[in-house]
Image (cartoon, rainbow, N blue to C red; front, side):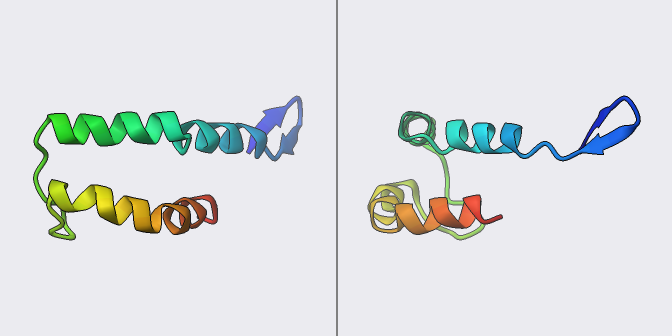
Length: 70
């Protein structure tokens, strides 16, 4: 929500623009490369970094849609 004078206004556009940037192929590739270069360890899902790329290739569209849908 935003405020203009005495009225509340919905600000959905900024959220969409931010999500489009965060979920852009170039940003997602950069994030993956950063995790890979840091030799990141498995997270809460216990997935190892070497397992990540095949998983992302298979489930990319579903993951992105899920994030957009909240």
